[in-house]
Length: 224
Image 1 (tube, one colour):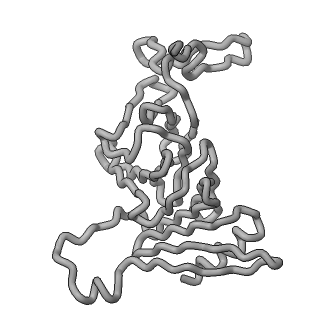
Image 2 (cartoon, rainbow, N blue to C red; image 1 turned 180 degrees about the horizontal axis):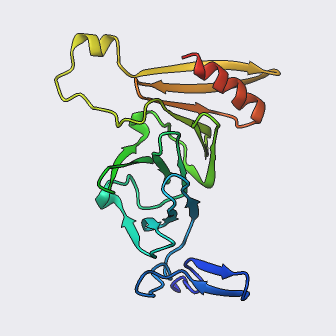
Image 3 (cartoon, rainbow, N blue to C red; image 1 turned 60 degrees about the vertical axis):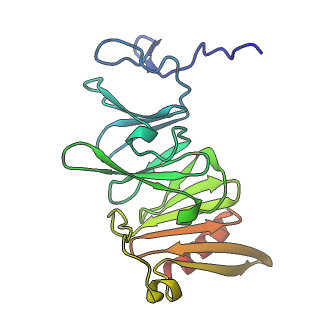
């Protein structure tokens, strides 16, 4: 089978004054993304950096110094394939992959704490779509998936703490994580919504993504 050509891949800068197009380079004038398939660009207003999603991980680029960082699963990402990027009201950055999410929390020393979320964490079994992300006014993020719309609400911005002690009867019978199935009827259409909630994180999976249904779902979701 003929190897797929990567000619034209990478990230390019368009200079309107000179009407020229040049590859984006690092501080050593190297086009460090020339062999990368760029799937998503996110200008982060919290840190002023350009977040770049590729098939081999996440690049964080400083347009002023031309310095960049490359984060992969080795650094804590759930997957190297990045499909969409967004941030919540606390400055955490969220990235979606095929079937996982990763939350990146900036630290005081300039690094990031990576928290992956998988199906077992309540995000459902849908496949995330490329560039299918939107942010609500309250910081809630909406991700488009093959199973509908997944909403993510981060209550306090803190990383979840996983208990390391042995499970007790209380944790088994009265689970700390609550999974509910709520049926909303909208204009004769039945929509199934899956909720997954903890003290600092909530996921909500909506089977249809029309605006009216999302608004009604979020209203019901806020009451839980």
